[in-house]
Amino acid sequence: MLKGKVAVVTGSTSGIGLGIATALAAQGADVVLNGFGDAAEIEKTRAGLAQTHGTKVLYDGADLSRGDAVRGLVENAVKQLGRIDIIVNNAGIQHTSLIEDFPVERWDAIIALNLSAVFHGTAAALPHMKKQGWGRIINIASAHGLVGSANKSAYVAAKHGVVGLTKVTALETAGQGITANAICPGWVRTALVEKQISAIAAQKGISQEDAARELLGEKQPSLQFVTPEQLGGTAVYLASPAAEQVTGTTISVDGGWTAR
Image (tube, rainbow, N blue to C red; front, side):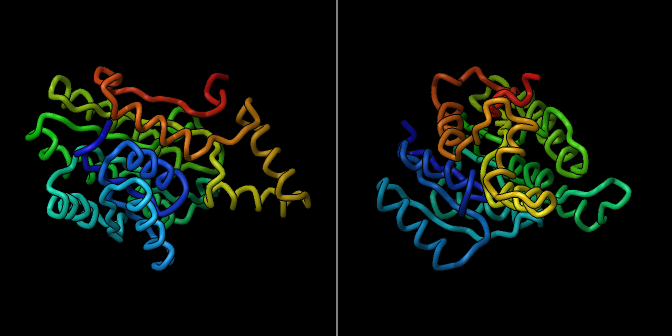
């Protein structure tokens, strides 16, 4: 379905981003991976994706905490693959603390990566998408883009910002063959969430699995983690002809979290 399309997926060397990149490659898209990690592991992932799906898969290690690097990532993709059709703004980090204790440098880092990088990626991709009359901007927000949680001021603020930016992007591109939407996952068992599970386990003296169940029980009525593969399927839907008139909205994939 996506043969001939080029997708840039940020934060895609593991977790949600890799799940989305895999799903897009499976539909025939050429993909640019981005993120941090062990160089040998990243190359193994890149080569494996390319071989399995018969598409071009590149890796760009751009540091998305810098706006110029985000824009460079998009321009490099166009330079190497000739175009950009889909950008999935997924990269993110987390820190938990009371507002009055929140380290300023952590606030700045979270806003830079979780929100400003989305702006820079979108701003760089849009001229190319407008020129070709087709584009899909898929922003990975969070259930925390729709509701709040204590001790997560920067993350919640950034993700609410992503939802707002998505709406503005959709309004500015309406009728031009471009859509902009945000996917709002609930708990996904990524390295980011694993740290929170470990913190609960250590604090309460319980096992990792009991801590995972406690985490789910607090927010996610299904009591099941969302998977990267499910989010990949959601991204493929948003890139499909069925979603041509789906723009400026959020799709919650959260096991019922925000239904409460």
